[in-house]
Length: 398
Image 1 (cartoon, rainbow, N blue to C red):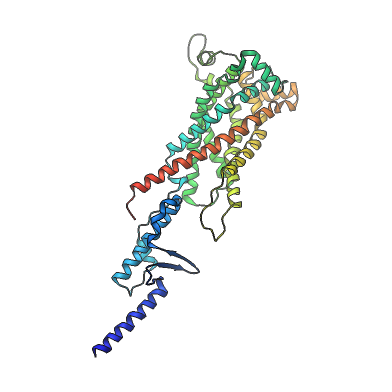
Image 2: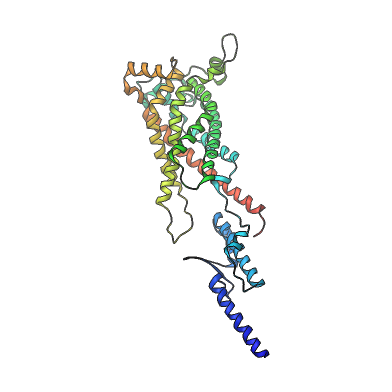
């Protein structure tokens, strides 16, 4: 009787093992394979030993796998005849990989935008000075070389850096506001769906980002161009000249001269800049999308980012040059409105004058976008890496 009972128990135990292996992937070798339809993943408990050698998203995937493995292992030890179901797995609190789009603090994104903008301004300000001279009434017939000579005769090499610190500080602050609003806007879409946002959503977010930043960039732009054409010799003299009346009263509206011109130029420019750059990167990412065999996410390379930024700069600079010409004339010449300036300029000089300084503008915008957009992405990746390290150090052990 006892021998019969032992043989029955042994047969039952073997049958349960076979059943468990077919339903949960349990095997005596200590490995667990979870099967879902035709897709399967094999996970080893020692796979986390080398997780520091893998990219950060993979560390979180391994942490998820380890948690699932321990759940299956403990379940099989406690009650080996009970298979681990999907419901059991869903009850586990498995950490989600961090998302650079949604989890990075906005203050850090704003700081990255500020630093990237300042760095780009520092690199190409002399070309901006040449462009301003070409677009003003005093130099609209000059080419780039003639405008450069004109500047050099004014104050030597210093002429190519007139207004730099005024504009760079204002532009850095505006960059912080612009990218802070832009990233916040994109998160609204990412919270709803992971798909690509429609054109209207991108355009609205880019326009809103510029409108917020315009309260800082317009005074900086105006004072910069007043200094570039040598109307004033220094920052404080320029502020006194444009914002203070003869009786000494302060008028903030003086700092916003040409505001309508900046809006007509920079809202389309910002929509093109931010929208096209993101779309170019997504297109490049799809072209380089890994195959189904290689499931590791492949980031687009720095060279790809530079190409995307350069293409963005060329299109945006060319498309907005006419608005930039009128904006410059509003700020450095005597016109009262955007429409009046446009009509008088075209009447006196022909429509071709709207592309004065186009080569200089492209030569300024393309290096600017090639510098500050990829630098902004690079700073985001660095900050994201630190953010993930912080999460790993402060998260419970898996």
